[in-house]
Length: 270
Length: 344
Image (tube, rainbow over all chains, first blue to last red; front, side, top):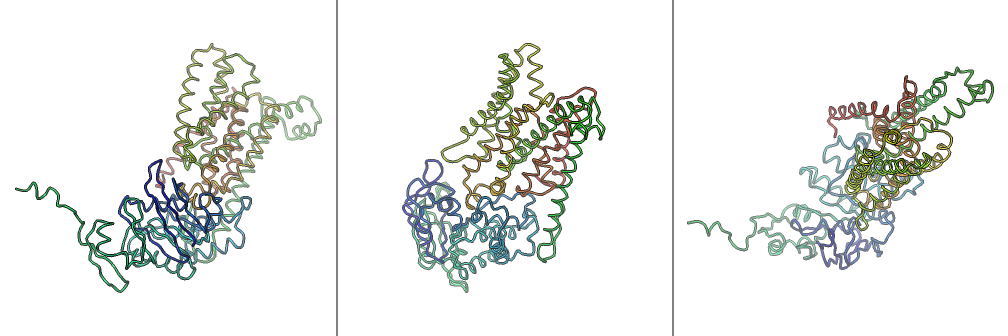
């Protein structure tokens, strides 16, 4: 099991946002974290990627506590694509992707070695951004930029890739393009993937399993068919849905925001 | 910086970038050679080329030998050291704090050093204590800022900057109060140091502080890859295996030692550490493996040039006045240029 959490709890300051999470990622699996706003899915991802320290519990990377591993050793196996990226002015795509080799370079090694250069070329090739490798990242469109940052993470040559809402700022074309690319890497390179996704349909379409979070707790884990039932979605997302079987598998169509009791509109009307 | 869409053939720009870096290096080194030559020959007693060579070989007129070896050479070396230290410290802090407005003095160094110097002068200790006092004040204040900024095991950029601002204004206020209450002669002595000057700096300062600045400069340049990673933001830097706390402490420590060393030689010379890294980034781009060494070179060039101008006028000016008078307009021009290009 490449990545596993045991009784993991954490948040910002002393306030726990997620608690008692037991979750394990299988090798070569794509797992998506789903939940309403504030359910703690991003926090859980940040706990697993060492950005936040857990209050209790552990996150294990290949059986070793990720927060006690040396940062570089952890970074050799686990890469992260954060939701928001800082782009230094003037940095070119090739320079950006080269930085992905950092955890594999000893501190005295100034330039990439042959192995590192090959890995960078590979990442540029996989993400199909070879033709603008010398352009400044800041000039790229949203979709191109996201692929450049994905190439950075792939140059890191990780076993596990964590992505925090990778499709948020992309239009539909680029959303599908990025997720298809991840699917290929997942299938062909055996990359294990955890994504936080807002879009339930995209998650259902691409993930092997879905982990549903509600109010900081892991509500349930299972295949899309198991998890996406109208009852579950009502409970976790407070929405009424109908299920559709489409050429790309099971999808949902949201019908209405579920309302446990009708609010004042009727009460105040004459 | 020109950016064009390039053909998909294998990296046609890298030779071009190499050429640009090489050209920039040649330009800086030629500038340095010229400034050093002018600094050694110009002054109240002008030396011709044969006289300079003779004096350098310890031959000919003994007055010329003294002028070269005991007056001009140590002063040029002091200018080079101070400039390199300030340029490099500024580049390190701008990279670490991801803030183009960061100067070597941002983390409270100027206020701490200034307060200590005013104290030393006020108590009436010998001038010999001024450099040591300045160094101590700089280092202790930065330590306080780091302690204030640290929360648990994290060290955030915002808290560092705010801590620096807080200590700077507090110590600055005490310093102003003491200056106001001190007798006339002392104000003059302290003010000269607060503005920054290389007047009368000799071998004592160079041999005492020089080795430290050299070691810290090498250490600073070795941190370039860490600075590159930090510029990607906290989350991504962590994901790439950086320990934010450790690298911020290391970079801050090196930058502080550099700036404190510079301050103990020349006082508070402003604007060099702020502007040089900006100019260097225009020349060689954003890769800190290049920006850091080039900032040291550029700082050395700018400060030795400024000192040359400061002492060739009819009245010798403190070099800090020259850097501020030249630096501020250049900075305004840089800001304007970035605005018209639609940058930040």
